Length: 179
Image (cartoon, rainbow, N blue to C red; front, side, top):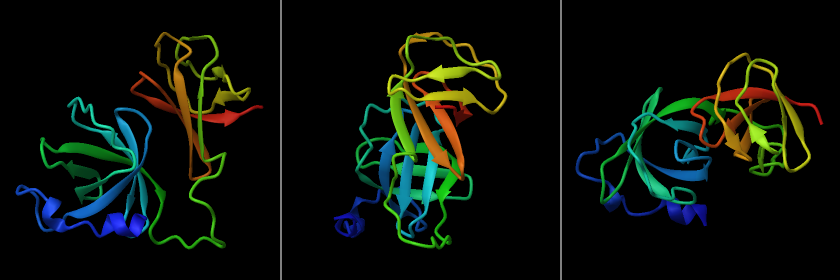
């Protein structure tokens, strides 16, 4: 199915794109500001929206034309202005050779749940109890106050570490699973 998506006609490319454009696949939309994309070469990137443009689109599972530089990805649309994203990190390198084939995602690679009860941000070693029964503790130092009741949380495994993204909070932190 994905091979069919990659072979979409290049007529979808808009007039303001350069010849360096390629087709990308949005694997997962983590929030309005963060997505995971796959390039045709197999590389997977975590992107964070750079422009403050509101995007009411649902990106997940769709193919778009994009220009990719070492720091930025500009995604183009047929009927609207492009959106610029920063490359936060490479999740899977096009040049890595796994020792054995693995599924695209394991249960530990991406966890989606809700923080139980009141959430008041983090302050260094904050412990987070999730509705799915897991308990995580902040492992990177950062301070952020943000109040929310039962916000959605996504924990993404990247390079052996776990990054926690809380809905409505612009920052993310690294966490370690306690239970």
